[in-house]
Image (cartoon, rainbow over all chains, first blue to last red; front, side, top):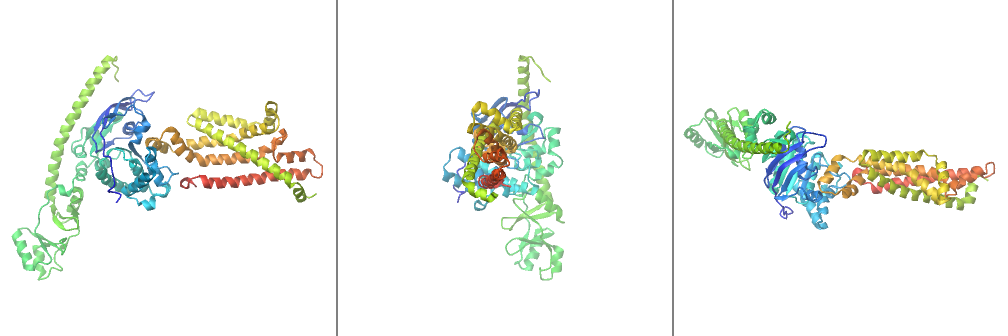
Length: 417
Length: 215
C-alpha cells in the first residue's frame, strides 16, 4: 500500500568539469582535472586501486571535500558555490559500515534529513515506514531498534534508507558494502539493483571491487592515480575491450567468463526441443522421436515441467512403461539466469544441454553448448566494436584536454613535471 | 556524650550544614559543568588548544586547596565567594579533560556521515557529537563531584558554608569532650553526601544516556 504512494524524484544529471583537488604541501594534485558527464538515472561506478582519488572525487560532489578548482553541476545547476549544507540535503550519502548514529533508533536515523528539510511529523512517520519497507526491513520490528541491535547487512540497509529519506535525486555511495561478508554483500547488491529499478536515481558508487562494479554499474569509470580516467564505459565494453594494460590488469583474469554474468538466458537464442508429456501414449512418443531426427526427447510432467531425458535406447528397454526409463532432469535454468549459470549447468550435464524453464518451472526451451558459444561470440564482437568507438571518443577528449593544458602552460611560464 | 547522643542533640545544626554543603557542591558543579563542557567544545578540534586547556586545569588542581582559598580571601573577601570560585576551578579538570577526550573519541566516520547528510556544524555538535561524548563527560562530572565534596570542607577556613565548619570546630577544640564527635560527624556527613550524589549520578546516567550506547 505504501509502495503505491511513493512519489519519487528520479535522477538528475551530474557534470564534473575540470574538477581538481590539491592539498597544501603536495605538489601533485590528488584529483587532477576530472571531466565527466553522468546521465540522469544511471549508476556510475568509480573503481580503482586504493589511493587513486576515487573517494576524494566522490566527496567533492557533495563538497565534503571542497574542490580546489573546476565546477560541479547537478541537473544543470552549478552547485560549486552554493551553501554546502543545503547541497548535501539534496544529495543522499551512504558510507561504509553505514555510519548510523548509535544513540538514535533506526526510525530516528532515517528521519534526520526529512526533519532538517522541514517535513511535517506525520509525513516523516509515513516516509520512515515506507523506506523500511522499501529496503526490506519490517517496519514494526525494526522501527524502534538501535543500530547495535542490527546485523551488518541490516545496518547497511538502514544506511541506504537514511540516504534516500528526503528523496534526493542523486545518491552518493562510498564503498557502502565494503564491510559486510560476501554473502550479505551479494544480497545487498541485488537489493540495490531492485531498488534502482523502482527509483531511477542517479547513483555514483565507489568501490575497489571490480566484480561489484560489473554487477551494479550501468557505466564504470576505471580510475588510475590522481583520478585520471583510464576508461569510462559500460561493463560489457570494459570487459571485452580494456583500454590499456592498467584496465586489463584491473579487470583481472577471466574477463570473458565475467562477461557471461552480464547476459541473461532470455537474451540468447533458445532452441526448441522435441517434447512429450507423461500422459502421451507410448506409441506417440516413439513416433515423435522417430520424426524429430534427434537422438533424444524431453519428457514433461503433468504441469509441463521438464522431467526426464529419453534416448532411443531407453525407449527400447522401456517395454510399455516409462516409470524406470530415461535419466531424470536434475538441473534447469530460468530465463533470468545469467549465461554463466547456464554454462555451469551445460558443463555439468553429460550431454551438454540444459532445459530452460519459465516462471512456474514450465519448459520453455533448451540451451546447449553450441548456442552458448555462438551467442557469446556474437556478444563479444558487438561489445568490441562499441568499446572501440567509445575509446576513440575518450581519446579525442583527452587530446583536446592535453592540448588545452599545453596552451595554458605556455601562458603561465610552462612548468611540467 | 556518646556519638549518637551528640547526633541527636545537634541534628538540627548538622542537617543545616549538610544541606549547605550539598547545595554549595551542587551549584559549583553546575557552573563547572557548563564552563568545562564549553571549554571542551571550543578546544577539542585543535591539538594545542585542547592540550592547553587540560594543562591549565590540571595546574589549578595542583594548588593546595587551603592555599587557594587563602589566596582568594584578600581578593574576594570571606564567606561564599572564595568557596564558590575555588570549588568551580577545582571541578573543571575532570570535566574539561573528559569532554575533550569524549568529543575527540567520536568515530570520525560518524562525523563524516553527519556532515554528509547535511547537518550544519552546531547541529552536528548538539545532535551527534555531544550525545556520543556524554557518557565520558558524565563520568568526569561524577569524579569532580567526589573531589569537591572533600575540598568543600576546607571552605570553612574562609568562613564558608558546609560540614567543614563541624570539622574545624572539632579541631580547634581538641581535647574537649565533643571534639572527636564533631570531627567524626563532619567527616561521616561528607561521606554520606558523596554516596548520595553518586547514587544520583547513576540514576541520571540511566535517564540521559540513550539505550543505544549504554554499556
